Length: 312
Ligand code: 13P
View 1: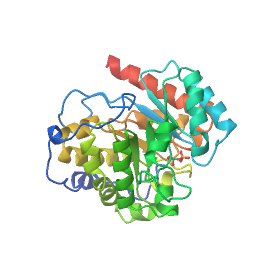
View 2 (view 1 turned 60 degrees about the horizontal axis):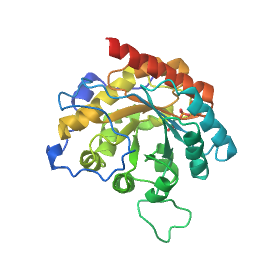
View 3 (view 1 turned 180 degrees about the vertical axis):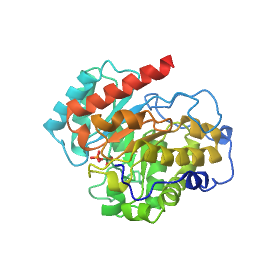
């Protein structure tokens, strides 16, 4: 979308709120993540720029779709289609009803495709009718969980505190969270984009630092979700750079190893411009992840960019 009401200026970017006091990663406890838990690749700390290759991650959020045999079919098609793109990490996020069958289908296809839950409860167990725990997601074969999606925040009343509690519980169970942040159109128009996003990030910074490199952030401007409106690559990059800076203020290695995905009407037609940005490390794809053709095309585009980056 090129006629956005208000894009963060360089000045706003530079003014991203200071992180809290710097902690060292050596203070952090190692996670009890299982071996299959995904990790970003990085060697050392450094400036808050894309100096370390972060493996591109393309994740599909199926939302409340493809929750039965249709989900198994979609997962099998994706698993077969992306088999050759091993320089890109691929994750699918089916509804809870299809998780076990989808992980089984991916196993049968011998594919390197991760599986994400779309939500979970922060408690380990108890009288929470209809809810799903992190351990249950693990039992269904998930390595990932999407947390704090704007639909959870706006339709189901999740606030930063809830998202932080869930993030903590996910890490503790060995699940890698994809924590979603993003501003509404109203907030963007009021020039509050960076303030809103940095507040949402600040709520999970402790958890992200403790399990440095394991967590993923997804910047999803609410006005771009399911609307067909996409942030221009420059708009998105400006917010991603501010997020990276906030992570860097907390700890340089956290900035280097944390992947920041963009989400909001990502499709094959706009993926290349977005994924080519230095601080965009992948995409969280909604609508276009429901068709193998469009989702695997986005993975193919990411793979091409990863190949190019290797030869640069
Ligand atoms: P769309 O790609 O359909 O806009 O959805 C984005 C999203 O919400 C992914 O989590």
